[in-house]
Image (tube, rainbow, N blue to C red):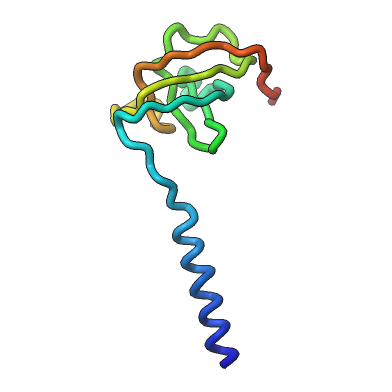
Length: 107
């Protein structure tokens, strides 16, 4: 009986490890809106933002480019399946943004 309970517990934990990381992947064409701090990607010419829910977005198509990366910005954009030389994050297109008064944390 005890071995059966242990096996059941291990199975439940294993299932949780498989199911938890599965977030609904955003679809191409979907509009997103969030606030965050712009950071340099790799290479340094690439611009990335991590949304509050932890998803990293490639905002390299942002125009005009922010002069300074010290302020939180509000972003609205469309998820696209376009390739990027940055090879990081979910690529956004048709990006609109505005600067907020909130400062990004340093470092």
